[in-house]
Image 1 (tube, one colour):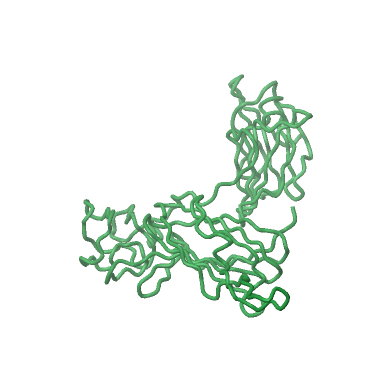
Image 2 (image 1 turned 120 degrees about the vertical axis):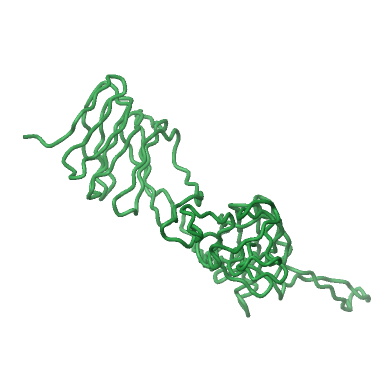
Length: 350
């Protein structure tokens, strides 16, 4: 697949950084999508927001004589198309005298919208999906902005619909602070989106702005790999790569596979053939090698991570179905055998 050039500038995503807003609106999502080829581009982006009514605004960012380079574009929210290609154009009619027909002829032409397109949508609480389909010439680009109206007269800096000072205008429709749908309380993270007011250590400072409380508790991406994820997944020491064993992914030679995921953009960059029915996987402390136990043929595949190739396959037992771990000094690999109730130790020869 040819690489598609797309610029996405996320200024605000609920749940990650400070929330931006105007005097009467809270920005849920803002991004710019650009094309540098004549092929369509499809892109999903997930963002967090409270449920309820929101407004989608779409701008033609090309501007000037580049404005007509956006040929078609559609925007979908949570699988529902809210902006269609025809919304980008408006039809103009005019009449002219046809000298051969000796009468006025009515004609029309299509002109791009000068202002932004605005549509009303319904969001769901938690993750929402945005899909952009853009077909344009080079330098054609659009900006998508999703906003929610603020509570009337509410001092709500982070737009989580919980008032900073707990006044009566900042009542949350689902406020967990003191119980009840009409409970009043101060926002325990006034500058950080924390709608559930989670506070793990009970110090009055919410998890989202208390470094001692923070922990990941939201699914932010779903990555498609291969069939039959079993129990093998390992992260490189630098955190830049993730290795996943695909138990049921079998090729013509009866090999299983390991998928390599780049964490910077959550994409699969390599699929490696290993043994039969790979299950457990472990990476050495220096990140140089990954060990995979293949439960179907009782072998351990050693992957060299610099080029993601299998450099050796070690026969351990008839079948391996258990965990695998590398010692902190990287000198030993321990492989569990579910069938025999044994642990095999792989090390250097004397």
